[in-house]
Image 1 (tube, rainbow, N blue to C red):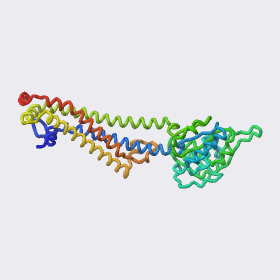
Image 2 (cartoon, rainbow, N blue to C red):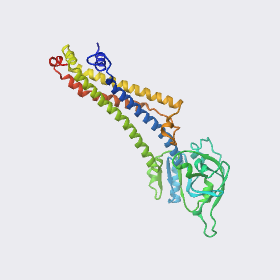
Image 3 (tube, rainbow, N blue to C red):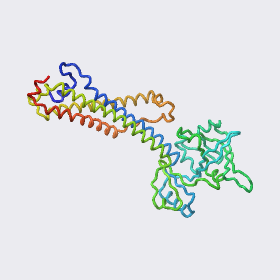
Image 4 (cartoon, one colour):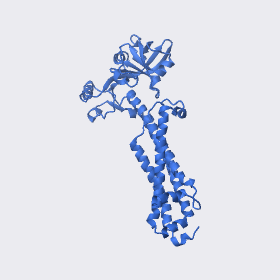
Length: 386
C-alpha cells in the first residue's frame, strides 16, 4: 500500500473499526467554506468596485484641473500641455444654482461642459448626445422629485450672479433633453449638465472653472507647480467611499481566512486525537520499517489532501454560485434595496491561485505538531498501548 493511500485510511477510518471517521472531513469542509467566502468576496467586490469606480471616474473625472486663480499666460501653458499630449478633456464651469419647474424649485450643482459627449457617454448610455444651446440633462431622482419629464421646459436661475445695478437675476429657460441614472451617492438628485455656452451666460462672477480629464493622468510638475492651480483625482474627491469599500473587502476576506484558520485548528485537533487513539498502529508501522520521516509524510499527505480537496470544492461551489446568479439573480435578496446590484461577478485567476496556495499552506502548517509528536513514539512501548 502506498503512503498516500495509507495516509487517507489512517485518518478517515476509526481506530477500532473500519467505519468512516466523519470528524476527519471537518477540516476539508472548513477550507471549502473559507475558500468560497474569500473568492465570492473578491468576485463580488471587484465587480462592484469596477462599476462604481467607473461611474465615479466618468462623473467626477479621472483628473480635474481647476484654473480659477491662475493667469491667462499659465492657462495657455495648461492648454498646450493637454493638446500636445492628446488628452481627452473638456473645459467646464461648475457652481450651484436654482432649478425651477412651475412652483417647484431646488438648489442643485450645475456643470457646464464644452464637450458633453465626452463626459456623458457612459452615464447616459448613449453613443452620442445631440445637445443644443437650449437643452440640459438632469438626474432621474431629481426628475422624480420635481415631476420633470423629457422635453419639459425648466428655468435656471443664478442669484449669486445678480446684477445689483439692474436687480436682474441671470436666468435661462432650457428643455430637458435627457435623464441620466447612476444610482450612486447624490448624483441623480443634485447634479445637472449644461452646454458650456449656457454656463458662460449664467455664471460670470464665481464658480469653479477648469479642465475635466476623463482619465486618471499623472500631471507633471510643470503644471502642478503653477501658482493658484488646483489638481484633484477622482479617488481623492471620493476618498471616504473608496476607503470604505476597500475596508469592507478586507473585512469579508478576513472572515474567510478566519474560517480557514478554524479549519487548521480542527485538523490539528483531529490529528492529535488520531495520534492518541492510534499509538499502537504507529508503533507497528515503525516496527515494520517506517522511519520518522515516513511517519511525518503520512500526516503531511493527509494535510495536503484536506487542503487540496477543500480548495477544489470551494472553487467549484463558487463557480456554481456565479452560474446560478447569472441565470437566476438572487443577490438582491441578500442585499435588499442596495442601489448597485447589476454588477459583474469577476473571478481573478491570480487571486484564486493565491487564495488556494495560502489555504493549503495553512493546513500543512497545522499538521507539523501532531506529525512531530507521532514520529517520536518508541515502537516497543507504543505497540503495547491501546
